[in-house]
Image (cartoon, rainbow, N blue to C red; front, side, top):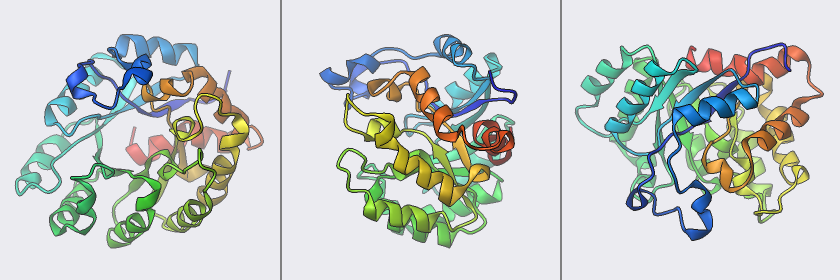
Amino acid sequence: MANYKRIDAHHHFWNYKPELFPWITPERMVVGRDFLPDEFEQVLRDADIDASVAVHNFRSLEETDQFLAYAKQYSFIKGVVGWFPLVDPELKGILERYAKHPLIKGAREIMQFPDVAPYFSNPAFHAGLDLVSKYNLTFDLLIGPHQMKESIQLVDAHPELEIVLSHLGKPPIASGEIKEWSADFSEIAKRPNVVCKLSGLPLEAKLPNWTDADLKPCIDLALECFGPDRLMFGSDWPPCLMATTYGRWVEVVEKAVAQLSESEQSAIWAGTAESVYQL
């Protein structure tokens, strides 16, 4: 057992309704059910994880409210990264209201969605990000590897905004074609206002037979480019269950960082998340 706190900085909850989850196809039905805090509390306990940050699924203020209600009820949830309508003319009033809530830590947008991808060049979106920064919130950036160059430009346009890159920008591990991703990932890491979540990698590998060695080049590059003080552990539970068990992913990260000092490991497991999300 570690001598330091451990935080899962990226997970979700949901009540499963098939019409809301079109991506849960028959071969993905392992996640076609409810995933709620009571179950996750036990998952964390079994893995010796002390606390968590819940991240929204839907582009919905109602879900953000639900996650805040969960966080009020379950003490292991130390923060919520919610969804907010970042291109809405009424955003200022919305953020002003939510930013007063001590458990709201950041905003996220799913840039991979076809109707959201044009936001990269939308002035209203950039104005929204300025407001996110003004209200001292982080911005979780969820992209595919093909969006990394646009993301670098976005980061450069908002140097005062703390940006959290989810899942290492989803490197194309399954294809083995990671050269371009590696170059872009190394470049975005040069921006001091970007931190990165060590999360989501099993889902980017060849399923179901991925190995630790498949993930190692990406993890090693993240350690080299971001360093422990700008990396944080995340599980991406429950989507991760389509590729791995919670415990196995924890073990992969434990092995990957085992050569680091205790203070460096502590940063990845807790310190970075505590600092970035003001936990």
